[in-house]
Image 1 (tube, one colour):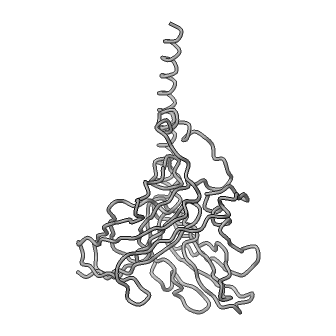
Image 2: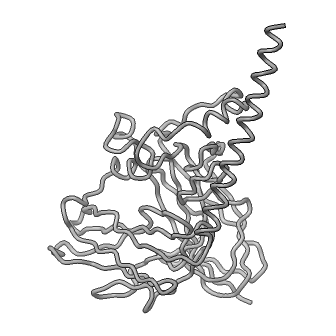
Length: 320
């Protein structure tokens, strides 16, 4: 009788905890969505710099879109520009929600010296500027990237993380010079295939059926963060997204979010319940893309192993 009573009480407690968790998560998500779903501004971010083999330097930028849902389009020009020099330095004009780190690089000459390069973004009447310099405090290497994106704890490393090399994504098909260009019509499905090669590091934690039990899921939701920086689940994935272009774009299957969606049920490596997808045996990934409006789009493919990443871009000319 005591044993039966114990399990009955335990089961009831689990149900109560589940309800409380769902209520808290739901209220938290509602608050976040109501407060920041749309209408907010973009904070451009200078992530740091790397020295290239030819002696030049690359400034690395990202951004924080204050909205949880709204994806903003800001064409290159008076509201999205670099200075001094060329306004267009390859920055995005389509901004995904929330924090997007290490999004793109801007190469500057070897004799750059102590000058500043500024990226200005003006959205919803709010102007923000990120300033890039070659200050030694902003040197970026692979361990810094893994740490900042949440694969490692802040200021930590391991033999595995130090030996990890970025995955390599190669989009299949013809090229026009150095560019990958595709032509399609509105409403037609464009199939993109990409091969992703990786060294298997960092190794994702192997999960068993017990990891998906009610108890285990509750534990993952209720466990406080183990590090002061954002936490990320390691595991290889490929994600396609819009980098430039203002029309509606659909991806089939839906793509894993490359941005820090920390909500529990988010299809994002930063979500508490996310698990890495199976890795194709041949390394080939396929997606169908459909465009709602004509125009020129740039699609962005990011292969991410949890710690490091590699990007490729495809220009798509969409006819009516």
